[in-house]
Length: 252
Image 1 (spheres, rainbow, N blue to C red):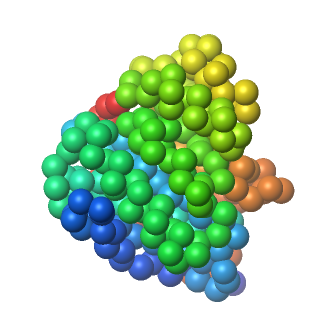
Image 2: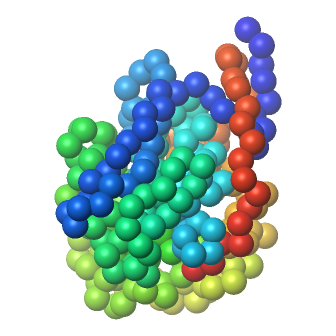
């Protein structure tokens, strides 16, 4: 069996199921669930994407790579979707962007889907704008913890942080050294309200994680699958490749 290097456009085997999420206020959201092709998942990652008005979608490169790689390499299920008013190569969700307010229904729809389908060990991953959604609306009974990629805290108040502190669930903030919105030292000050929060500065990284997606995925998997410190860079088995859109200028 041939050994293939895993590149940016490499797609590894998985069961990929189109998903329609139904919100409490009557919208249909476009999504996809990727699960291991040959076994049950050991954990689940629910992905909340960056700001859609600045190019963020379920197909943003970090989440696209997570869905292409994590089911095969770590037995992690990946649920990603477009929030209201967001369109990508996967399709367009109904509704209009509401700057993080009505999006609470979108987050609830995704987490209710995970609960209804008995997906195991659910963690929420938020990126940029998605971190605000995760902190505001991610304290669902099914959620074990939250991973924040490039947190901004633009739409997050002290009450939201205090709620996570009281819940005691893990809060992992991966903060790029050169982030445009919140850098590691400032993030440590802001997250000090959550005793169990772990703020990890990522040397050399920037808000978009261009060139650093593998580091971010390694950090995610290390939390979801104890004992897996680093994902392999090659794969023994059949692979395909798929080009994605260019990296957008993702805002907060």
